[in-house]
Structure formats: structure tokens, C-alpha cells
Amino acid sequence: MRTLTALALLVLTSCTGLSASEHADSGSVPDSRAPSSDAGLPPGADATPTPPPPVAGRAGLVVIDVQQSFVKSASNPDINQVLERTRSALLLAGQRTAPVFITYEATKQNALPATVKSAVPAGAQEFVKTTFAATGLPAFASAVKQSGLTHLVVLGAETDVCVLQTVLGLRALGLGVVLEKDAVFSEETNTAPALRRMRQAGVSLASAAEVSALLGGGPLPAVPAEPIRRLKPLAVATVLNQLDQASLNAAQDPHKAAKQARLRELLLASEWFGVPIFGTTTSLPASLAGLLKKPIRPLAELAAEKGIEQVVIAGTAQGLAALVDGQSREVFLVEDGLLGTSLGALEPEVQRGAVPITYKTFYYEMTRSVNLSEWPSPDWVARDPEYYNKTQAPEDLPPIPN
Image (cartoon, rainbow, N blue to C red; front, side, top):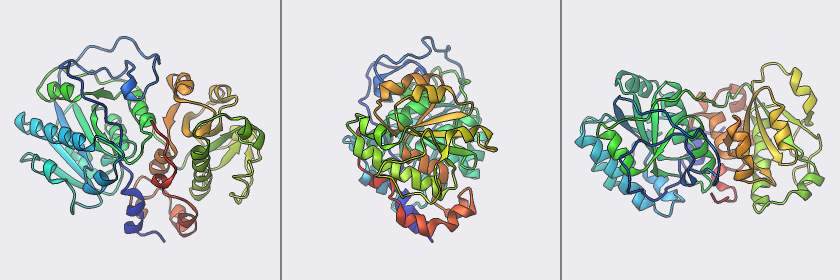
């Protein structure tokens, strides 16, 4: 059985992100809904054109898992600058007496890099967590609620796992969230879907200069009313769209091999987690044939399935828009598991409410914790010895660039 230590080796390479260059022009309130190319949105993607007016309130700072193990594995070429921005945010929070919350994944031992540690202000609250979402730790959630803050500035690692899940958890608590987009990092190169998902959930993406204004008592972005969509591990189904051999052959995609690798993992993980698998076709291409113990069920059977509230869609892009529009359940699109499509091509579905995810975010949002005892189902733990050896860590899959 996978122990906490073994699982941590799989997971503690997983909390990272995109680091854009700082914008020098700001003291303005960041817009949580206007599109931005450095926020992972495709050029020309539309969004609500006029953001709500700024509001009064008080902001604090949350630093997620800026640990040496994550720093060493970061894919960000400017990781040193990311750490410097983290240091600057901590110094600023200390100068302006903004409450600071710092989390560590699994352990504080050899955690913060020295340059960051020296900037931690007196009075900062520190938490060791095993759940990827810091809000999954009752002590953290309670401290945030008791602080009386209306907004939190979030930075750290990994962008597409612990940062993402914490941000969604904070939004679910009714808080305004500002992500310092130049101070998040990840081992994963493809963090654009996570950033777009955060934005979809009403998170503001801000530069270091904008964060300085917010922590200084400046006007804060209005807390939006966007719904917070998170995977429900025991109420989800996997839907394969046109994943037969002919459709796979026809799919033109520069990342075909990398996406097929993720499809393999998605199928195995779905079986591991007891997620029912449906398909627009019930045959698999030769590269995936023989993986599953049970046959793929016809999509027509999904309508009568009880207890399924969400669908995770992967496969190919053929007829994808019609499939998404025909769903009565919440839709999550595995962008790096959909062949023959690109970010720009999926944006209309995202604007209509489909949630962009990757296989990596699926895996860690389903399991939720480095500790097997905190997994959503003991059946998953019982199957761990079999599937741990069948599957690859999401971080070991072929990279896909942003």
C-alpha cells in the first residue's frame, strides 16, 4: 500500500505555475473578468466587459507551500524572480501589518528558502497541511474566518494543485481572492487551464505592483458571485468523446503523443477511483485497448445513471461542442486529454460554463490529500497497491507547453 511518504513523493512534486513579467503601471484594482493573454486566456477571448466597482475591505496574504522541494522542481525559468516577489510581498505585508498565513505541504523541515524565510513577519500564522487545499485544514479555515478579512492575496506553489484548490476553497468561503500571478510556480509547464479556471471562479489576477496597492489599504475588487465548481469525487463520470481508432487517426494535434499518455492515465485513474466510464463510441484505439477491466458503457446509459452530478470529458474534439451543450450536468473539460483542439477552440465552451482542467488537476482534485486516510473512499485505498504501479505520476508525463 502506498504510504504517506511514498504518496508524498508523487504529490510533493505537484504544486506550481505561470510567472508573467511584472506590470509597472499599476495601483489600479485588478479586473477578475476582463481577458488577458498573460492570464492563460486566448487572444480575443470575450468576457464580461465592465467589472463591478471596487469595494472597501481588508486584505491579508496567503503563501502556499513555497518549499525548497517545489522550488527545485519548478519549470518556471524565472524562479529566482518569483522568490524575490514572494519575499517582497511578505516584507510589504509586515510593513503594513496585513495578516499573513503560510502553509507547508506535509512538513516544515527544510521548507522555506532562506531568502523567503528571512522576510516572514512576526505574527505570521503557519500551518502544516496534508490536504492540497489549505482550506481543507480546519485550523487554517478557522484562522481565516476569524481574521475578519474580506480579501486574500494568494501566491506560491503549485499553481495547478495546491494554489488552485486553496483559491477555490477561499472563494467557496465567500472571500475575495487576488492571485499574484507573477509569484506562483509549478513543475507543470501547462498551467494556463488552472489560471483560466481561477479566473472563471471570480479570482482577480494581479501584478506585484497591484498587490502592493491592495495590501496598502487601497480599494479592493468586488467579491463576485460566480459559482465555484469543484470536482465531487464520488459523483463524477468520465465521458470519452469519439475516441475510436478512426477519430484518433483523424485528429491533428502537435501534442498528440503527450495527450494520448494522459488519456491512458485518465482511464486507469477512473477505474482506480470507481468512476464510471461512458463513451460516444464504445471501442478504444489500439494504443489504449486492453487497459480496462470493464467495457465502456454507451453514452445513452448516462441519462439514467443515479448519483452522477458531473462529467469529465476527454477524447477527441470531433462533435465536442454538441456533446458539451447536450449535458445537463456540470462539465469539466480535460484540455490536455482532448486531441485535435486548442485553447482558443475550447474557449466558447468555457465561457458557457464548462470548467477547464488538466489530467493532473483531475488526479489531485480527486485524491485531495497526500494522506491516504483522507482520500474520499477507502475502496480507492484498497486498490492502491494495484493501480499505483500501473500509473505514472502526473509530473512524469510528457510535458505540454503553455
